[in-house]
Length: 338
Image 1 (cartoon, helix red, strand yellow):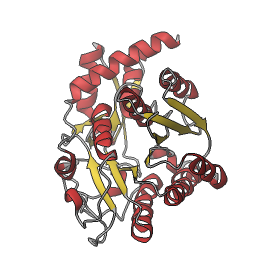
Image 2 (image 1 turned 60 degrees about the vertical axis):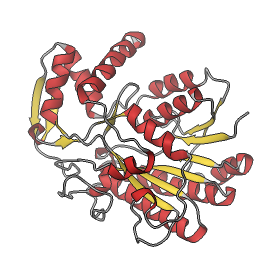
Image 3 (image 1 turned 120 degrees about the vertical axis):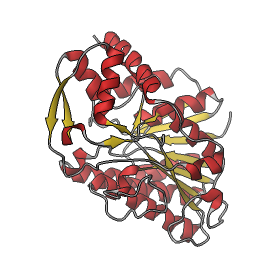
Image 4 (image 1 turned 90 degrees about the vertical axis):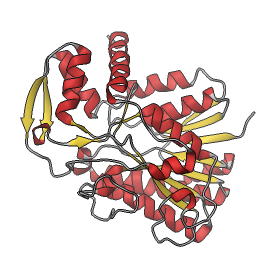
């Protein structure tokens, strides 16, 4: 039996895809998820059903904010490689329920760091977010850009994760890699994200809600590209060089912590996203034009050149091809759920 890799958030969107890819590659995976009801738990259960088809997958439902439970999991397995994707997601929701972000994204992450430290893990790969850049208008966004003025509590917790990981790398030589994901989409996606919301609204004949009248741009990144980047990085822990593989370190000093952008590098205006979905679905969208929300930013645009230098890959799936795959999956998922 191969040494297991811990994937937290295994019932979530990206965690599911990563676990499935690792299993397909012959790895053994231990998945953790608290199965929160932030969105339909039936979708999470369906993802887990797919993963449980493999005898190399084991699942534990637990809350990573529980220090004793998390410590016990690490004491039992002592994972060498950990991919931490569990989090309370959603930019807008962080204004409505801030406590859940503190518990999951701060306390939970601290417990993961402690688990990795005591297990002497070889590598911690963890999810950050493009939200850390806040209202930064220097495009494309580079990991060397300022990330100290996030516009949402969600973004603030993700930036805090980066600083916490850097401190553990410096103090305990814990090799850690943070990945700033840019608007990930694809099959098995999250129901609270634009691609799902817009597709559902068009098919249901309901208005597509466009904040700032749709005049925002997002760097939509197809999930398979994200997974490819993560898989390539798992086996490449930072060696302690100040700019290993060109990656940014917060102080520039020698450390075993690095950060990469993981984005497609081709921002799409939200109105164009709706246009493409109309074409794929062969239905016109009703557009509800709304004002800008305080938590939203006008544009995200990733410079993923550091990632490409490190692992020889950067996301490159064209938006129309990725959206077609999502719509095909979504129609089938709806059909089966009816």
